[in-house]
Amino acid sequence: MFGWFRIEGFLMDLLDTSVIDDVRDALGDDAYLGFVRRMLSEMRGLGPVLTGLQGDPEALAQAAHRAAGSAVSVGASGLHGRLKAIEDSARAGGDCSALVGGLDAEIDATEAAIGALLA
Image 1 (cartoon, rainbow, N blue to C red):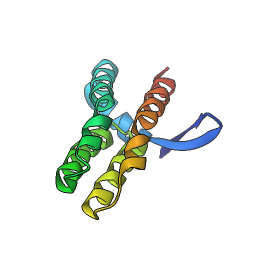
Image 2 (cartoon, one colour):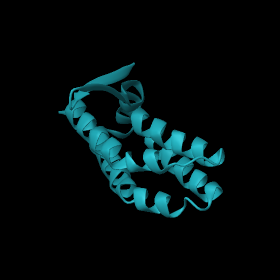
Image 3 (cartoon, helix red, strand yellow):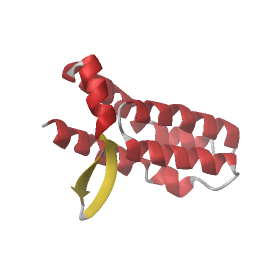
Image 4 (cartoon, rainbow, N blue to C red):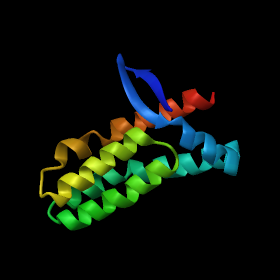
């Protein structure tokens, strides 16, 4: 089941609550929150890294793939989807700048949605 949250007037599918529930059950709430905070903090610096890799599509795809794996493992399905789209676009030789440009907003929305879910 996906969690739906209203962010700036739009409904966005950001979280896979079944994954979140499973991880919280396995790790506990404190460990889950710590893991999510570390992951989101690391992702905040990812935009410039991905932008710098635009000239190397394979490296860009690999970096996006690694980050997407982290996102999906904590139930951040919207963030995972954006990173997967960056990976797919890079592998196809496409311009990823618009997708990368929206990464920080996706991270912010994910953080807000997780905070609301666990409040």
